[in-house]
Image 1 (tube, rainbow over the protein chains, first blue to last red):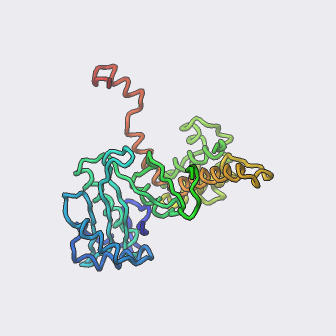
Image 2: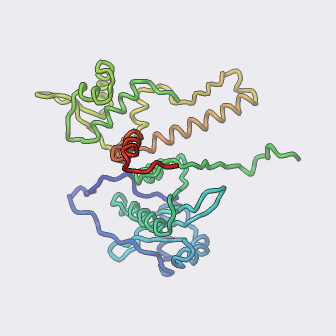
Image 3: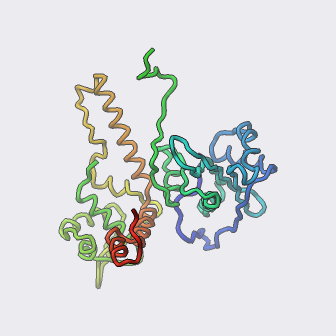
Amino acid sequence: MSQSDTDLPEKPEDSTGAPPPKFSIRQAAANDYDCVVKLDAQTSGVSKPDYWREIFPQYIAGDENQRYLFVADLDGQTVGFALGEVRAWEFGSPPCGWVFGLGVSTRVREHRVGSALVKAMFDRFREDGVASVRTSVSRRDTLNLSFFRSLGMTAGPYVQLEFNLDEEDIGLDR
Amino acid sequence: MKIQKSTTFALFAVLELARDPQAQLATGEIADAYGISVHHLAKVMRQLVRAGLIQSVRGAGGGYKFAANPNRVTLYDVVSLFEDNLASEFDVPGASVGTGIGRALQMVGDEIEDLTNATLQSITLATLLRHAARAEAAPTSTEIREIVSEGHLEPLT
């Protein structure tokens, strides 16, 4: 998960008292690829053009597969993205929205771009008829944890477990 | 994790004041609102002033005002002022840490502590207050029972 804006006041103003910039949210298109790759590299610190090349077609295809990639535009430039999808029946979980990617340009932080992207995703999931949305954030990533909590998200009913494959298996008879 | 009364009182006070940063409230008003000891709360307020979270207001009326940014102060910032040790309740004695069972229990304790800290460090006062506002707007279970018993709603079967 990339960095995003954090808990924000209702009407953010910069030090000059200027109104916040106006941006728009839309579904991504094929020609947004370069921009999203660059944004993701900037915000996550990891450049992954192959990853995006593989998933782009699936997430810009439209409504049928319930996979979405939204971008935020400001003054003709794309300044943020959010990646999400509906997942169903994982260990008995009814269909649920998942937000699993988010990146906002550092130059427009704290202007609610991240909030708007995620809320657009929430609205899309509502249209899909799902009742809840989840995300998975490192417990050490206080910034993103605070951000998603500021949108009203709380700890979910599932626990994420992990196993280090470098370690020896336990509980398995060999 | 069991927290002290001072910690709970501090959270009540900071959140009540952060709810309206322009307002000033006396210790007694906050104590009355939450049914807590004025004397105990007064000591807590002094510590919150020293931490820079609230400020005392002199003059007619007096009282306290919120002095920080509710979008930046987290529950951990308040709790850590009053709790010396936020570590898990799993207190594995030093001598047993060298054993496999001791280390395994310490691992569970570390996990609990990690989750506790991650939760407290990621909830700002502003976020908590949004949840509070939603809770205040929702009917309580008693109110729901009254609505059902008055015949306005069918009970769920």
